[in-house]
Amino acid sequence: MRPHAMETTRFDCDCDKVIEMEELGIGAEEILQYARALLPRDDLRALLRGLEEILTASGDNGRETEPSVV
Image 1 (cartoon, rainbow, N blue to C red):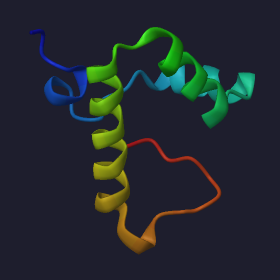
Image 2: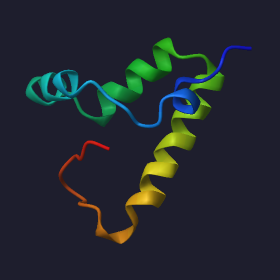
Image 3: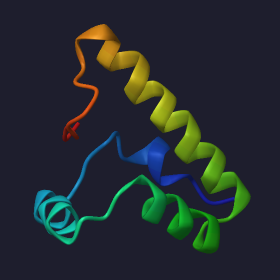
Image 4: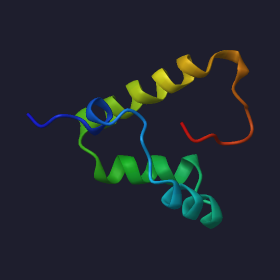
């Protein structure tokens, strides 16, 4: 079984890619469609765990309407 990206990379990202996605107006719906179409079930579960961890770590002081790079 291959290790999950979320387990090996802790919320690291390519900031240029994030900016590009923001400029293209890519939102949650597009990301979910991509994930559903391309990721195996185990990777989807890892994605959900990672999102829950991000939400838990941000607590109540996170912004609700603007994206943040973690």
